[in-house]
Length: 251
Image (cartoon, rainbow, N blue to C red):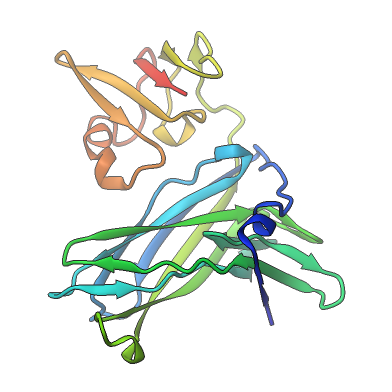
């Protein structure tokens, strides 16, 4: 059984985190299991801000009246369904550590619960951090499945909470050593104009955003954004970004 502990905000922020290894490529998809659920879900790309794997789960309210979404923390530990290894994730205000006494993962979380009010068509993003190493547990290549319950209720009727289940499927693979590169190499911060050696968007190195020009207009690719925000860029490059493409890289 997983343990969840409550901490002050300051204590939770002090939880130690190990830098993410660079040899893993992680993708995640989301689906709602209930066919009649009043929500839709999608995920943002997995990035490594502050040297940690992280992504978002975007929940869009599709009901016909205002509602309140629960402040879900996405604290889970699952073993690989295909492959070997352990996936440990934790959401907003939560960390993850190994209890020698209990021989399990515990999730210390802050107590600052939030009210997430939504109207029809509104979206809310739940942040998720992936811990690649917790105690003896290590994230390895494989397929991992996490089921997260999203609670919701109508204003003034919190005692009548309802639930919808979001299934997250993580695919973890060894990174391709032949990933594309830029010439010149992007600066550690600021803006760089460089030429791409060729390859898909998933092989672009870490950056806040990338820009190309089409007919004199800039088209962005923002790795941390949901798929719809990058639709124009992906329509231009549905497979590989051709070698020789000049791009503006923002870090």
